[in-house]
Length: 325
Ligand code: KG4
Ligand code: ZN
Image (cartoon, rainbow, N blue to C red):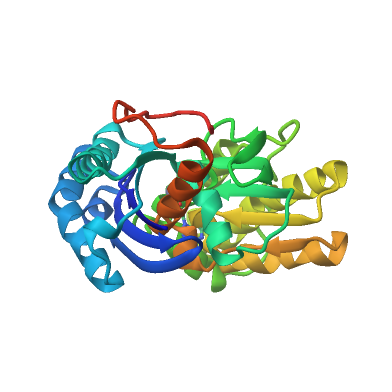
């Protein structure tokens, strides 16, 4: 069965085609316009999605050599995200579905990220501990099966990627700041020990760490930005590592799957090797282009939901902050 996935929740206009867990086409256009504002401007994002969505869909179909009539499922992200942006992809997908009489499925963006793990590792066994770390979310889940999750913890304030973006801005780096900050940190030296966030249970917090960087820069006018980037990155990634470790200790899972934009971070990937050494767990992280927002993860999640639960109603609204189904 062939599934088309449309993702327009934030500043990526992305369209993917999958057949089961096999990727047929994966086209993503990242909107550069937001860089000059140091963050995503929702109205500009919606306008760019409108300009791009038809062209990108056509390109994905051409590259995948798939005709519209061959599609078995048309999926789109319905939330979380910016309402205007979501409505562009959602409305486009519903229109295609209605006019071609092909089932439509609305996909939760966080569930979409989890499916990037299945696209890379279709053979992964259940249950596994899932961490979604992106610009908008930091969620720790027990993944019992495809489409079956138990939420264990979440961020109480900023998302991890959001903290990377905000600290990058303090260091004069462009938006989105995750990758530039990682590159700058490579040139930095250890020495600045920002306090590791302390939060109960499996929850996360990054706002205090961001403020600690702000105060450090205020009090150390001659600080090496590379050393600050290094210190921040270590503290942020240790926070993720510590929460994963404590979940492994009490839940006794054998596998950990990590996804979302921050999972593209090479230092995080390196640190997570420690989980295998310490606990003998297998760590599954998709390749970087599947970690950041894309259409294939939405296509894959939509297809699985269609098989399990049938199509979504065309009345499904866009939602800024829906909980995971
Ligand atoms: O999953 P994603 O593409 O979009 C959301 O759902 O938010 O994640 C984007 C986030 C941004 O905050 C970006 O700075 C961060 O992921 N990111 C990184 C890296 N690459 C992207 N953070 C740390 N290190 C990276 N290499
Ligand atoms: Zn995302």
